[in-house]
Each structure stands twice: as C-alpha cells, then as structure tokens.
Length: 115
Image 1 (cartoon, helix red, strand yellow):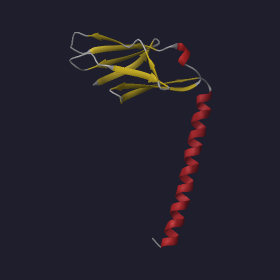
Image 2 (cartoon, rainbow, N blue to C red):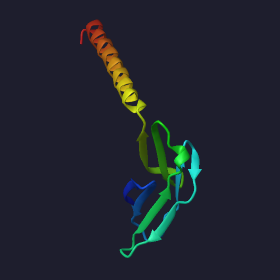
Image 3 (cartoon, rainbow, N blue to C red):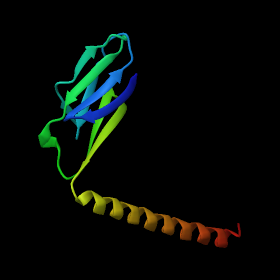
Image 4 (cartoon, rainbow, N blue to C red):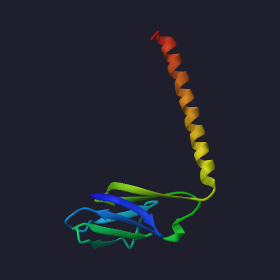
C-alpha cells in the first residue's frame, strides 16, 4: 500500500508499506518510465524514488500514473507554465455552461411532465 508521496528535487518519492518490495510501474502518456528504485527502510517499509525526466515537463498539466499489475494505484500531477491559469478558467467556464444547459433542460422536463 502506498502511504504517501511527493515530488522533491526532480524526483517522485513514495513510501510503500509491505513486506516485499513492490513491483510498480510509473507511466506518462502510456509510456513506462525506467529507474524506479525501492530501498528497504528500518521500519520494514520501502522508500520509492523515481527521477522525473526533464524532457517530460512542459507547459500545462503532466500526469503520471503509478500502477501495479495493470491496476492504477494512484497518480501525481505536475503543473507548469503560464497557460495553466487560462486553461483552468476555460475549463471552469465550460463546466458552468454545461451546468446551465442541464438546469434549463431539467426545468423544461419538469414543466413538460408536470413534475
């Protein structure tokens, strides 16, 4: 079980609680990333560490999936660049427009059915 994770100094780090080292895969845009290391700690847990290749970082949102046996356990996201603010505003505007459309359709449905 993955207890905690963080990104620090260009590396993803996590703590795995388990008797054996986990067989995890980390992927970005469906490509597996190499060099995930697992080091046994004194408390019987495992310290996981993965260098994040700099060429994967660019403006916007980059999501990395952490999997075991084809099942996604968790993910971490790195957000960089100026365009993010505009991306978030555009996404919120889109969600608001869709919500308004759904409200109108629901109200119309209630009027038509007499509910």
